[in-house]
Length: 300
Image (cartoon, rainbow, N blue to C red):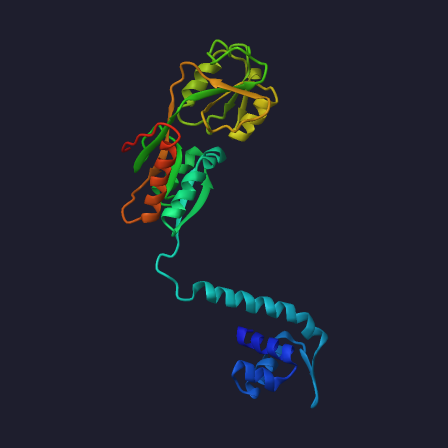
């Protein structure tokens, strides 16, 4: 079965006239007849009732009509898509983040990058910390936007912002007049923590210090920011996150965590040389974060 056979079938089905179909297709009538016979042989059913005076679709032909239309339409769409392709018409830039919350911060930069470089076509992925930098080094990712990793990954790092650490806790769990939270304030509260394999760089030591001598009953472990917010909202305890990664959540109050060191948030990539779309994205990131807070950059 090929698209020419299907085109012959569709033209005969529309005109109910082999000669007229041949004229529209710019071929001879015997050629149309041969294509229809080949198609009927392949399908194992007659598609038309033919007499010397008329041509009509059989029941099988009527049933096959929709399938033939869809197949031809798909084929024509594919041809149009790749007809006279422009070189580098689309550059797919694969961007990795460790959480959906980090992806949410990219929207302004993604918008600006597309405006600056029309070939920029982002492919966004969420990958755990333990895998994300290996995928960058192996070329599966073009860029990683996340909290800075402790052990230095190969490549270039550009800091976009320094994010203070906030404490998230159930509304009413701490005095209303507090303007910041100290570790002593949290002494009587259970904690909601990332599992060791999911904890962000910069939070691991902080989590360890806050755990102290708490009993296992006072520790609730999660694997995502969404799960963390759900447990805090439900009253299971307090949590720590870099500022900006948690969406406002009813029933959850957020205050700065006193004494906690801000973490570096930025973009990793291997090289910008000869890659205008990736360069446009990195530039858009820096401009976006600079407009909303301090931004510096350094080589990793």
